[in-house]
Length: 372
Image (tube, rainbow, N blue to C red; front, side, top):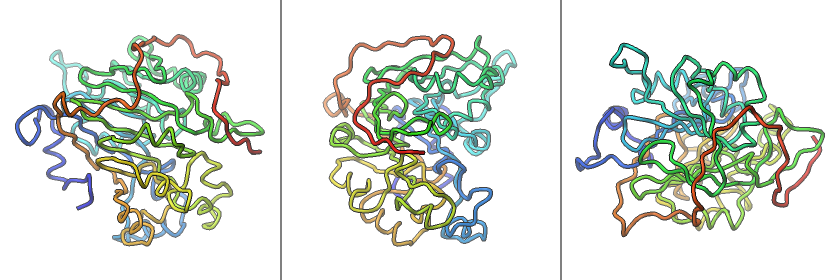
């Protein structure tokens, strides 16, 4: 069995409402990978690259995956989504813990209480449209991401009387639900594709691309589904986490070109490759982490294939390639063994976001600017 995964029967029992941990105590931090693939999912609807062809032909070495999203909970009853995938409807149907309940008055009721966005990419925000049917919801986003998403009138279908947008600030923990604390931090990235201009800054560290540190019952999980570079500061921030879910989009920087399905490299798309001397596997080799899991995996990535050289390299380094339904359950920790925040937090602020502000270019770290 792969690290971090559970048999289906165990997974269903573990994620049922109100279940305690195996020792009968509080469940602690629970995370379910709703979708492990990058944009378009795997296999992609119009692609027969080497890896997609295996999936279309039913090869048992590959398993289909939906688009990137993670669900977290402190009690197994109420859940927060980290990104809202275009496949969210199918993901809810596949995950009993997220399925609707009937309210005491016969009204609709959902265990999904909030969504936290890590960027404005289509594969992370389009699922918000699935959540438009008149249910209370809080959407947490940086000012940059809210500006990008909120400027599109299509998202006005989220009833403002029920769907509250709240601004999150880098380095300031906030609580989307009781028992859960989340701190956002900038990671090297870029603006969403639909906001790119004639030239694109790759590797900027702003609120446009963030990672999330989640803490619950003393345990810590870090979620970084998009990352253009691993810097020493990022390694220091992630070090010591109980679980790291990290960007695994491409294995080779030029794999889309080699497969003939695209012209952009992984780095051009804002994603550091997994392999190579300067890839994430090497850059994070010394990282102390309880579990290390690759998410947001592109359909061209050969580490999707069980037994491939790329998968063996990932396995040998102590990493797992996530599948839809992969669950991570982190134990409750005592005060003396808490996993600390990687940085000292400032007082928390939560601001209800008004009408989307004009997108601004914030102060950023050095980056690479390339032509489109």
